[in-house]
Image (cartoon, rainbow, N blue to C red):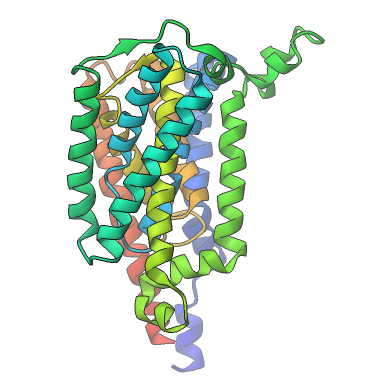
Length: 347
């Protein structure tokens, strides 16, 4: 390749910035748009609701993000969350503590992840087929355990209080106004999500662990020949995915004080959309945890903002918007990755 053609193909700084941070800029633009047209959009109560929703959804799909980054898929995450929701709610309603419920659900999630991961990585079965079957089994189990309907939790306990607490509540005794500012409106569960985000981002970007994840999609065999036990690594990724989905299911049970066997379906499209849309942030065309958080925030802002402005009078319109965003995000991610692959081949 000549120097002239190399310079010609080199993207401009503005184009490169948009490719990496364009989605983040879109998030800021959406917030400004809705805030300027609907003043109540930035009300502390509304901010708390949005951040709480974003936190729980991120915890649910952060593990899925890494599976997608390897070129695989796990569509059972929502069913895992639903089963965890029903099991934890049933245990707490029966008189057990949330800590015990967490332990039982974590063990259950690990088993599910091991089965999914083993069938995909050691038996060589299709990840899509395996996780579709797994999702069907788990969702049916949740329905059977709950007799097909939602049920309440009479004594939701400490986890309910934690989910509904904000940063402002920590200082309420010393400052009555702290809960009214923006920082005071941040729910405590959002801080948990931010800790998870930082930890997973660090592993993804600063450790060889992350390098092995992203190297697989380009050349699985090369990673294997480098001495990495790829099958075991990917098995652990499936376990992590189911474990995080299960944690989110427990948090949802505590937040709404109910066991909801069908609650997972509402997160299915949102989760996939956030992961694929988020692949347009930081790593062009590659799923990453920071991008997933940005994707989730965009979906939450659009949902809350559109509802506040009366655009979602028909529930079907909301689903159409989500489906359109999923299609757009997937298409742009594939296009971006294709351009990146072609550029690397030309060098």
